Amino acid sequence: MKTMLSIFLILSAAQLAVPVAAHEQIGVDAQVPAALRNRPATSPPAAGAALQAQVLSKLEAQFHAADLDGNGTLSP
Amino acid sequence: MATRLPAQRLPHAGSLSWLSSLLLAAGVAGCGGGGGDSAPAAAPPSAPPPVAALPGSYADPVTYSGAATASLVSAQEGAATVQARVTLDGRPLDYTATTGHLTATDLQTGQPAASFFYIAYTAGTQPAAQRPVTFFYNGGPGSASLWLHLGSFGPRRMATNFPSTAPPASPPQLVDNQETLLDHSDLVFVDAIGTGYSQAIAPRTNAQFWGVDQDAAAFREFVRRYLAANNRQASPLYLFGESYGGPRSAVLANLLESAGVRVAGVVLQSPAMDYNANCGVFNPGQLSCEGYIPSYTAVSAYHQNGSLPTDFSTVLDQARAFAAGPYRSEVKTFLANGTPPGDATVAQLSTWTGLSALTWRQDFSMTPGAYRERRLPGKVMGRYDARVTAPIGSALAAGGDPSLTLVGGVFNNNIKPYLQNELRYTATTPYLGSNNVLGQWNFGHDGKAVPDTIPDLAAALTLNPAMKVLAMGGYHDLATPFYQTELDLARLGAGSAIQIRNYDSGHMGYLDDRVRRLQKADLRAFYNSVSVAQ
Image 1 (tube, rainbow over the protein chains, first blue to last red):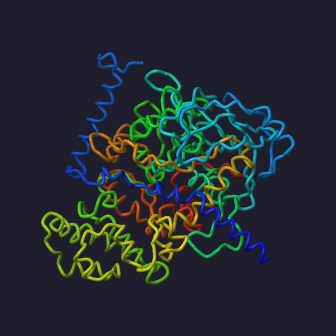
Image 2 (cartoon, rainbow over the protein chains, first blue to last red):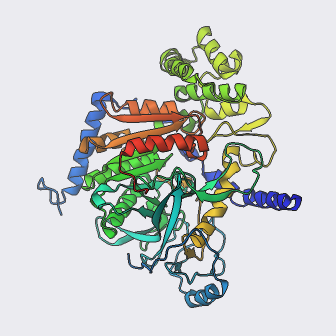
Image 3 (cartoon, each protein chain N blue to C red):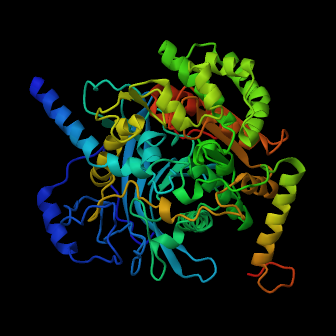
């Protein structure tokens, strides 16, 4: 039993040793490169009518991007 | 599916026949189709692994790389297919596991663009139109989807005693997942390009998919390909993204809806919907940390009592109101011109967090990193799950986040054996569980340096008002705090049918056995689909 526990502890240590460093270096969600960690001056998060306007603008841009012929209809 | 070998029902796993494996390995050696640079985070390709001669197996001859400049010369849609069974509450659930690649094409050119690695679990005999299909992916960016795959709602999961740091009585192992979602939906776990075994196809390179918009566009093409290849266009389609997978889901849902693919529902697991509003993203002193105040309150209560009091929801409601009220008002002037906060506000913060009034006066907009350093002197507190702590200098603390170190090795070391031994998919290269892509990721989106994807989600909801959204967060998550997610989603307006569930957990709530059961119950209600469990 003691031997099995020792083997398990060794295996566990090996498991910890191999991938963790790489994982934790980059597995930090919501992080960004140093160059982006200074927050630019931005307008407050859009909500309500401002968000709706932003959405309509976004959808309009998507439509125009798909309207390759520029004739007001979606190009196949 | 180009390669769909005969399937055979099997119980789980089964060791491979080494003789037949060696013979088959000799036949596929040297057939590598990979190209480009070697992955920086991956070990050099090892000798070809033994290849199963068992029915349904697939020995992938391609050498995969996560390097920025890597690309495949070409791609094949090969897959292993096995039949398996789990027992849920004494009832058998038979399923098919398909493991391999599908090719996403460039929507503009129609040319192959990326080879996505995926594992699909399908069950039941319902007509496609009645059987949901859910696409799962982790975030990072740079993370493969092994966390959701092996930890959440697949038919098999890694059993751990998370968040306990006590050595387990037995080694962590794969078990039948009593909380699998497979009874209510088919499940597809897919890896982002440059992770797992997913890779760009020449002339495209991996790095060309490393950005908010290009990543989501590639996922859209994968989803479309999967639906077409499996004749599932009529199926209710769900997206399940974690962390960065949340904003990916928002962008992806809009792209799918715009392409005429209806999205029935989106599940956001601890999402980072608006990077611009999360003070943990930026250097200290630039943004209000109000989104973290309820999390600090919960974490401090946990460490004071050893658990959260059962009636803690009242305190959290007070913390929410406080964060949106006096704290928000005072932190605004504090950040603008250094106006000191009021005594009552500081006293409240001190009471809830256990940190001194002086500390709060000096650092009124305290970032999660600073909170983690101060709250338990001599210990490193987990970022993804602040319940997990380790003494400074210990092995568990060495990586910076003991909550990740606690389970990272288990997941990363078991994914490839699982693919090989149970799912009968073998590859010559290591599975890339994570890839350091942050420095090369294009975070820009809609004119902002870092993404705000609430407008994308709003656009998707405008195109499809029936689309359901469920956000799930954890009280002890100090990466994507639950209250910040609530604030982000509140921008959609009171009329939006967004459901929010928060649990006594960290970022990956499903790792916690008790919480995973709660999540499954909430997901069952969210899907409201017919179970295929017998």
